[in-house]
Amino acid sequence: MKRFDRVTSVAGFFVRHPNAANLVMAMLILFGAYGLAQLNTQFFPTIKTNRITISVIWPGASAEDGEANILQALEPAVRFIDGVDEVLSYAREGSATIQLEFTQTADMQKALSDVEQAVTGVTTLPEDAETPTVAFREFYDRVARIALTGSFSEDALKVFARKIRDDLIARGIDQVTFSGMRDEEYVVQIPEREMRRLDLTVAGVSESIAENTRDLPSGNLEGAVEKQIRTLSEGKRPEDIGRIDVKTFPTGEKIRVRDIGTVTREFDKDQTRGFSDGERAIELTISRAVSADTLKTAEILDTYLEEIRPQLPASLKIVKYEIRADVLMGRINLLLENGLSGLILVVLVLYVFLNARIALWVAAGIPVAMMATVGVMWMTGQTINMMSLFALIMMLGIIVDDAIVVGEHTATRFALGDSAEDAAENGAGRMVAPVVAASLTTVAAFMPILLVRDVIGQIMSAIPLVVVAVLIASLIECFLVLPGHLAHSLKPRPRAVWSWWRQGIIAAALALFTMGLATRPDIEVVPYLDAPADLLRAWKASLGEIGFDAAVIIAAFAVGGLIEFGFFLLWGRKSKDASTGKAAGSARHSTRDSRGFVTARSARWSRHRFAGAT
Image (tube, rainbow, N blue to C red; front, side, top):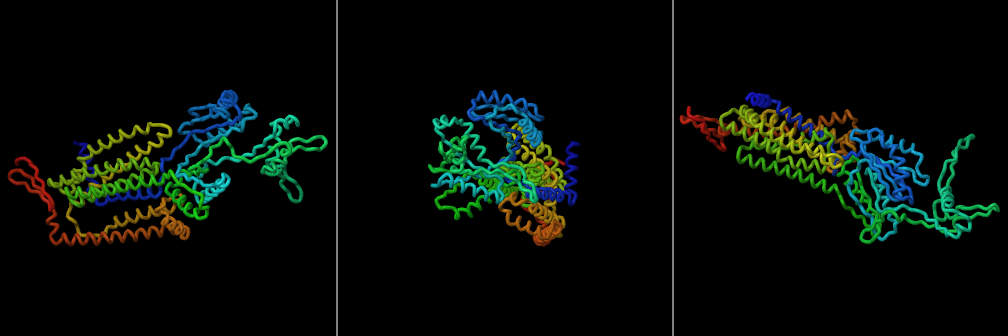
């Protein structure tokens, strides 16, 4: 009983204080408005990888050779680096790979530097093995894929693909990668009889070609004007390679590559080739970085493709597929549709069984709790993605349930004779235990997901975090904000007055959202806010930061005044109607007759409860 009294005393403070409930609601709305302006939209949650890969190419080597000569030389050097959690190494024909998995708290930039230094210190690798490659893969989220295909040569497709890649990167897209674009290579074919006749070796010919096909710095030329000297190769065409000397006799006679063999330009046959409907194709994968917005990146891609299509040959086909932005937008629309339908159903059902004002305040708790949830998501580093949207859609029903039970019990207490304040206080206090117990059960069901590790754990962790955020926001709204509004709605309507609180809340929400939107780069803004964001950034550049903030505050306060003026006219008309006699008909009262029946009446419905003999 003491616990119930403590709960009701807290609820009673917010019920009887004239501004406490409105102040908490304003803080939730402002918090959510700023968070909404800062949150990114993306397909998957941001994934942090703690894996560094070391790769060594050794042409012609078997898997056993790679293990004995590469892995056994590199593993001792990198195994005991600070922060290494797991080492996975494997060798295959022509290559060897080591994967280093670091702990979750490791500084990956320092780890990458340590691994590079350790690999550089290994000097016992085979001479004909290539230089080890140390790679740390940062997170890039795929947005879409496009394929270029048509009756064109592979060279022509590569030209088109490179142009599209360069244009997209220039417009702000973070990463464009190719698939099906093979590297060029020059093949020198010399008959074996010529090699034997001239006493040449494959390694000797290869070294001669390599020395004459690369540019090298050759020092500086000092004097009145200091100049840098570089040794330039003759060229990189097949004809230029054919003019390279492979052997010189004492008599001055020279043997060139073209004298004993042929040079052809080909594509690497070991790399992947792309085809679409039987025609050659090159695939471009469009990806975004952590800070970029998926919807914005997709809009940049769509706009560019519309502009570039008329400039390309008609026979060149550009096919776009695996568009994740469309799936993400569909999930966002589903959330909005469910939220709107939930609001309408709650208002209609509660209007039928309770009254309109209680129905409206219960329904208002849905957007208020959702705005608070968005603010918590921003503060905890989350984003709007497929997993968090799934959790929000799933939790809409819980937000509605909490508000309904508090509103219904408050209406019941008021019908049984409690005053408006007592009904709201007792109704909220009575529902604290069951609602909190149900919330804790939900938390206990979802929190174990946080124990899942690795990449799948990072993807699924968005669900319990959003669930907890929704439950906290729902509890705050139901037991601190809603009782005060219910108590106000059950009282007879007073004379209409201007509410500076309401005007200030509306103005502050508009100002925070506007200022937050103006600070975000263009690539991070969702497409439907592009026009206002561009306009705000232009105004901020012309007015300066202080002038822009002052102008936004003044404009927001003016808009809040216009909205409050509309409320003032609306409530003033209702107050006038009430003064003519409707208020008396809608006021509730209770009487006790000689048999002990307590009867509560209203203009819309009545209930009877046996109270016992007096």
